[in-house]
Image (cartoon, rainbow, N blue to C red; front, side):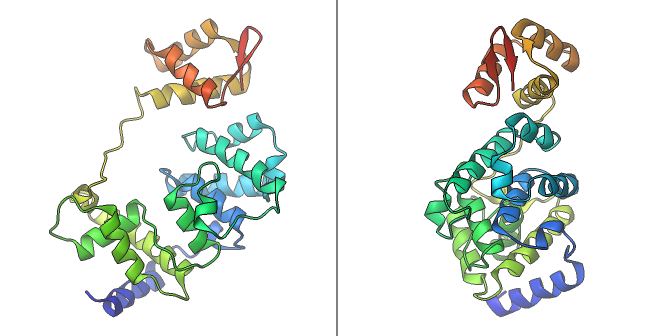
Length: 271
């Protein structure tokens, strides 16, 4: 499939099947794009939509978010997982607000900000600024492996990125990536049994949530958002909630303290 054929196929599919009503595709600002991209990392679109709408209503700008209380930010984030993303988003808002209140258009400058890596910087440039850049996520990687590398194993992301860049239209980068995201999600359902991403060199199966350290981290934050607790009481409460002994509780708790998600408050632990 050459460039013209691929474009015709993707644009045609998007016109008929695209998710044109997603809230972050309306009233576009760099802030709104950033919030949506951070929320969408490893989280289903259906779960993100109500959280995104509530978040934007409460904190519509970088400045508004920078003035929020950390515990309110973490409380709003509940249900999205990976709470450290919320903390980094809050920290980023403070940094941006201290300067001109705007996200930079330079990729290297973006990636110096908390929580922004290669994917997110590319997504911001494409969705917020309509720049013809290359970036990949699970959906985009799936498309290109399926259509351009159907027989190859251990395909590197660099090889995929080169093909992605060759396909990006110069004038409609934003809509192009919307189309890719939507088609990639569709392809994920269609090819669930024969997931093309398994042929990626960077493929890693996500570990189970139940029984994981991530489950414990989430339970600790949920509990402390209600009220501060002494460590012994906190551990007892979490073990009762999860129905199991947590032998590495101290290690998990220390990681939350190091990441500044949890703090010591006298004899108690708090947000």
